[in-house]
Image (cartoon, rainbow, N blue to C red; front, side, top):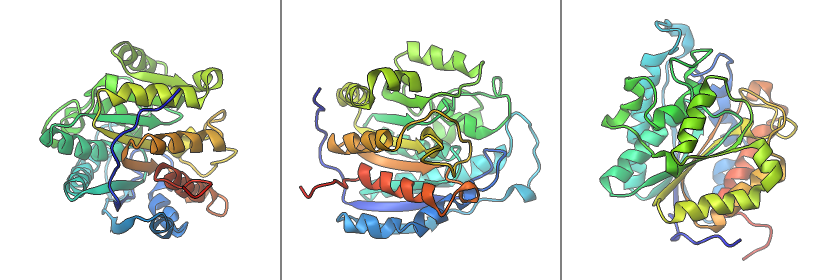
Length: 316
């Protein structure tokens, strides 16, 4: 199967750190952005020929200074506040012809990043698409969540499901249509959450479990996703939760789940997306240095970013 080509993308990369760990119960992913930088992210991207500007980390209030007012939406006010700022930053980078690279933080980061991307697309008559790589579907709502953790809700929020202060961020909802979303690698979905997944799959969303990956293989899946998006989508965003990868290769993550993507499968996703010319923005999330060994997961995350942005085995 042959991938259709997108136009060549931007050569400027703007890095934003979003050290959020309010979306989950386990602490430590707030140090993810620092861990990726420590793994020589900027130098490696410059070696690929990009102009790179690191805009630093956004400030986020820690859990210690806050009170949980709603156990079904933990830390909602601060997540809304900081997500609005992230959305503005991402949209501004796109306006200045940067490719935004967002470093999380937990996956609640995506609430703000996708809001900014969707805002830019809306104003420029573009259609956004999202490739969501994750062990989890992140399609809970306040009604279905067993934990109240907002990092289990960002894809639902982007599709218009859930709390209005999140879904209406940037003034409109939904941010992305179901037929322009693909989930890859899911294997840990809450019972009630699965109802949302099935409903939106019936509305055109692509959802590939690890069983699908085993049966079909990554090349077939990514070819199908990208060729489908080619006719409908102008801006493709990759949201890569590192727990999508098996803990054998990425043990330092917020919520590890056995049976995930292999090292090569993860790289193949990124390599194929780059080869299609499809990457317009990218976020890498849920690296937890506290649970990591010698920064191995952060180094893998940087390697994957390189693959998405053009690193190849041979010189072209």
